[in-house]
Length: 317
Ligand code: AKB
Image 1 (cartoon, helix red, strand yellow):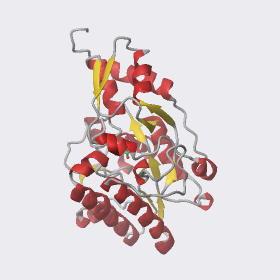
Image 2 (cartoon, rainbow, N blue to C red; image 1 turned 60 degrees about the vertical axis):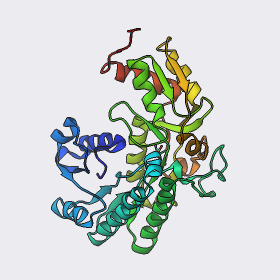
Image 3 (tube, rainbow, N blue to C red; image 1 turned 90 degrees about the horizontal axis):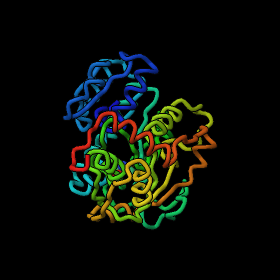
Image 4 (cartoon, helix red, strand yellow; image 1 turned 90 degrees about the vertical axis):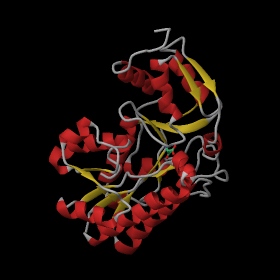
């Protein structure tokens, strides 16, 4: 698991360790120190995916048969440093695909994102096959990543699979550097201070998914019968879709004095370039995708999980 210290990687690693045994899932992170639960439950390696020798060393040492390549620079950070986004998201991906091909790895999971879409894509129910003209470097690298995935399937027979993740909401590891991060930050701030200043406007409506559904989607796709797959590295997966104001309203059902203000910054333009929901019929038909959480059940669970760990620090506490 590259990117194992990140928002999705950290929880996916623990889910896979529970499924396949702690010693059988190697967590690989870059600079950030691993969380104790991750560090203490199984092997951990420091890996820079842009360094081919690092990738080779871990595949070789542990005789890896399946790679989950979660390491990536997300949309907002990618706009601050497009060169870094290209190096990590493309050079890193090519290193992982080449090392996997040469070492006869069975399967490679390469996540994509709703960031492949752009302003020309239909915003309501973005089709599986549609215009992919992203305006961010992150989106550019994700489109190229999907195409590389399909190329490795066709040219080398490598079993590459991937989903177009929407914004992922979770209570364990905070996200970093994404445009959809507001949908997680808002919960921390609502519980800790009762106030949040949102960096996109109240009407901003994006596709989102709760982490348990994200883990389920990823594992279900990886375990799907290969013969049933028409698509490989670019599945749309829908779950929920709400505006920032609707999220704040839902939180207010649990924290009635919660105040949300809006000060859009450069991330507004990125959010505006993405669709508000996606057509995921291919995922439903080819490998049985079905989400479990909606806005109400996700919000209730987030508040329960975070309230057990965080304390309110403001005067209203
Ligand atoms: C981001 O906001 O950049 C990511 C994504 C939608 O891929 N969460």
